[in-house]
Image 1 (cartoon, rainbow, N blue to C red):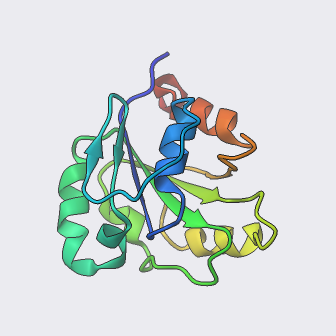
Image 2: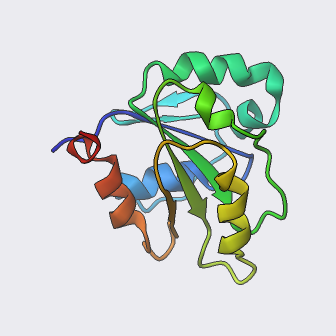
Image 3: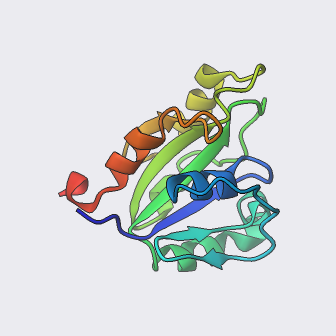
Length: 148
């Protein structure tokens, strides 16, 4: 089983690049994503694209190059940037990912609630890129055959 290409979107500082690196098994420090970054199996997007409706068209167009779109919600964030039903506008498989679950101020329930109204076509997975918790489960969900 091989994973298809995954596009990762979320707010600035939500842990998108760290998540991409954890999925790839990399341990180096993440840096701020300034532009859309393509890797062999991932598309990492700047947080500004998710936070500014002006850039939504770029997200929709870029999603055509992906098999799955991950909507990332930081468990330490007190609010959601996502408009209701937003995931339904993407013609791809969509999953939710709650990040930073190892953080002392993590509120996984609130983060799951923030993702609940998006119209996701798949489950929500809670992960920690630091401890590795949930990363294996997310990898399994991203396997192509898991969607057949």
